[in-house]
Structures are given as structure tokens and as C-alpha cells.
Image: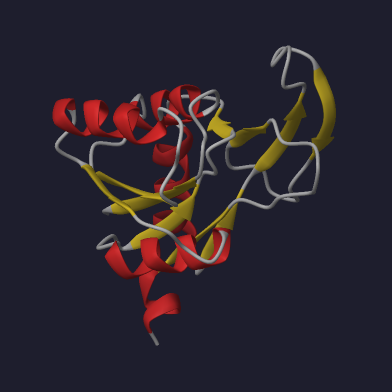
Length: 163
């Protein structure tokens, strides 16, 4: 099962390295990594370009957008996976088996959508747990470093977005 992970960025050079490392270190082998940059003015685009040269599964675009939802919709249009998921540029996957576990859940449960536990951690100290959001049926663990608003990381079959 091919999984497309979408990350929207804008001036994210401080947080994007951890985000991308967590996606690129996943054990699931069929991952397309779609990065949509909103015409960053810092070193974000250069970092993305350097990673894309080293990883053939990265596709990206950089252009002005109308905010994060516009960027995410652009990513959905570019995505070719059977499953589409979002990992925001200030978030990261807490374990190398997160995507593998999500794919297993889709296959075993014939699910339309899968989500996992969220750990809200301190930006300054990612080992410091601020809040834990527990899913009813735990699949995987995500770490969220942006404490300004609650987030839900959900993966859906692509057909849900294309209908």
C-alpha cells in the first residue's frame, strides 16, 4: 500500500529537519513524501531541495499560497498514494514504525481512516510530555510540538479526497 505523507511549510527551517527525518526514517517502504512550501524566506527551501536530491521519494513545490489549508489541498492534488496523511512541519512521527502500523491497521480492519495517540511535547524539550491524547484503539504514536491548538493527525484512503 502506497502512503503519501504531506507536509506544508513556511519559514520552517528550525522544525522541518526533525519532521522530515521522522518521515524519511519510517520502516514502511512505499512512502511518497509531498512537501508544499509557501515560498519561504528562510532556509526552508534549500533544506527541502538538498533532501530531495538524496531521496527519490520526495516531491515538492514552493510558491505563495493562501495559508496552510491551501497548501494541504495542493499536496492532496499532487499525492498519488492509496492513503494520504499529514505531518505538519513542526510535528514528527515518534517511532520508525508509525506508518507501517497504520498500513497494518488499514489492511487488518478494512478501515476508511486511521488515527493514533498524540503526545503534546515541549518545543524546547521534546522529552517533556505536556499532554497525552489517547485514541480509543491505539495504533501508533505521534508527537506534536505546536501547543497553540489541538491537532488530529488522520490518514484516509485517497478515494475519500478524490470523490
